[in-house]
Length: 380
Image 1 (spheres, rainbow, N blue to C red):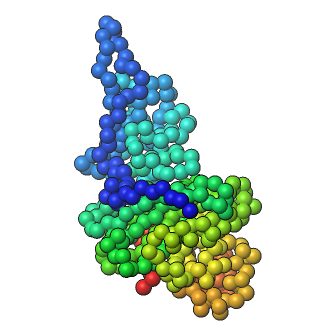
Image 2: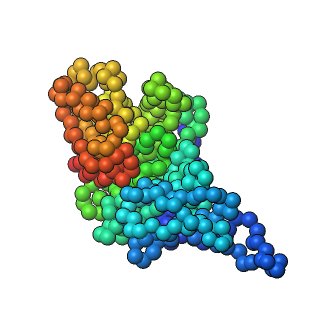
Image 3: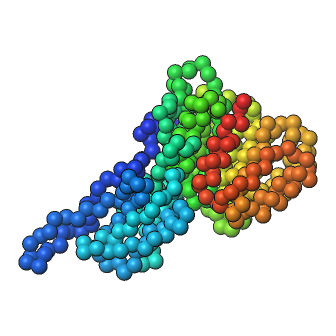
């Protein structure tokens, strides 16, 4: 397998939006009443003010109605147009965190063209606003040793096309030539891609911080594109999981183990994911306990009884091989009932697991916290 990769230090690998870059206005400067050319209008968005408020701007001369819609509480706010056709609004005291937001222009959702930080998606439609906490939150950049984020393009013979993956290596990896590291295979949800867990989830900073605190063991983290097949309804979901499993087992794991110093035993591998990726992780992990001793799902599209029949029919063997089965979901998540039914099934079969019912909805703010909770429990 041939690979082209770019190594990025974590310090530089994620775009910060704490100070927005001025962007030139679209179109030509307008002429004044006497025909004189006016100075160009520059739009800065977002602008983070000293008192914690945030100003958003968009130049849309022909729009009739513009609003900003943010993921934070009470995140929708109407914007007002000034004489330069720039729509502006300042919102008060956005909580610390990494938030998605977009503009709604005459009913059409769009990213903020003044902000280069865009959530990686198959169909990008939200921008990123990152407000660090005081003290720092688990996913904030901190002055600690940092690992590296590497990108690979590979030809998947299992799927017959080019694919991409992202690999995080912990601080000191390149200096420890005699060490083999455990591996966490970490998956995104439907609509996202292999870059979302780092660019938006800040998974690399979460691990950097936990490792620096002595709370998590240094590990390699592999993030694949979870869309291995066209997804159309539940049948499509099953087909996608099957295709993803082939790519993971036949292509990616051999590639990672040939190019990185990682362990190749089940005790040295974990698989986890959120939403669609949670369903993939639970299905593949529980069906391949000879490869993964650590399995976790965040707000998962949980597998059916038939999909994990082997584990359910032999719980004693499952309990003997599993080091940890971790499942978490928020109380406001639309997948809550399905997860509760899945937990009841595990309890019925006496399969050991950890169940975490938390506050929150089906969204990234709780998935970052789930990773920060899970990572210290892996590979003790």
